[in-house]
Amino acid sequence: MTPFGYRFFGAFIGILMLPTLYITAKYLFRNRKYAFAAMFLFAVDLMHLTQTRIATIDSYPVFFIMLSYLFMLRYTLLNHANIPLRKVLAPLLWSGIFFGLSVASKWIGLYAGMGLAILFFTSIASQIKRCGEPISPQNPAVYRAAQTALFCILFFIIIPALLYFVSYIPYFAPSGGISVQRLIDTQQSMLRYHSTPGLGADHPYQSPWWQWPLILKPMWYALNYYEPQGYNQTIFAMGNPAVFYVSFVAIILTLLGVGLRMIRVAAGKRRALSAEFFIGIAFLSQYLPWVIVPRSTYIYHYFASVPFIILAGCFLFRQAEKAFPKWKKWIQAVLVLYLLTSFAMFIAFYPYATGILTSNSWLDAMKWFKGIWY
Image (cartoon, rainbow, N blue to C red):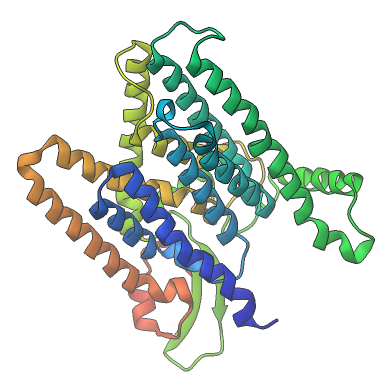
């Protein structure tokens, strides 16, 4: 095993995230321009670059989470009344498989399970409501929903559990092999670690959940002290300021939109399923659990939320274009300016994201976050 070997697959997965987000955005917005914008913004995000090239585990669960949501989105967009059950079940099967792989990679995959369940049951409720018949076993939508739900026990519980079990075979192989009891003991040990209040609170780069969207404390990964005079190398996990700040505003507006939509749904005036609902639920499922995690946390824990805040940013532009058709050219110009600014920020902070040898003058010029840089 060489540095190239153990970093290759994480970086490769990071590349695969880009078309995955493109396809997701294309399904959501039905517009290639905004699908490209989402993919481009993710490509120039500094956290995406750093986390996928340093040989940590984070690339894999985030990729599988993205895929699980993509296939759940595909399921919600199907015209269920006019297609065979097997075609309805196919995207759910893939969503469940990728959900299982995300959990097997890291526990943050469990967070996705909450969002996937909300989207699934919201879709089921929407199908029954669209049918227009009384809720009863004779209602074809109810019967189809019951069949689908039974299959989801296999897709989202049994298959993920098997994948999780199998993923531990290499871990236990050198010490006598896997057993259910050994697996349970390991989970209990992990849970004790993650539920220890204040664990790691003395870490200089620990950062609570509310600091992540505004990059208030990047995570310092590395520094090389033996470089030519006037040059240095360092690595920080942080977001692209242009991407994060615009997306922060966008996700707030998206969540407000979801709240207003839910009020209208309760009044029977709107359907729950929408692009903003999908984005809001996916984001909250990955972000809110960190609010109650008692141990110390770090900005890289925000990584699984980044694809969805980027989608929120593109959704904001898309909605503005729809709401103000006379200003379409100006909105598109602002979008292009946003993409160019994000790319410029990517270049400016690139040395901090990658650790390449860079002059101190460049590094000093980009020390925007006073009190936390080395």
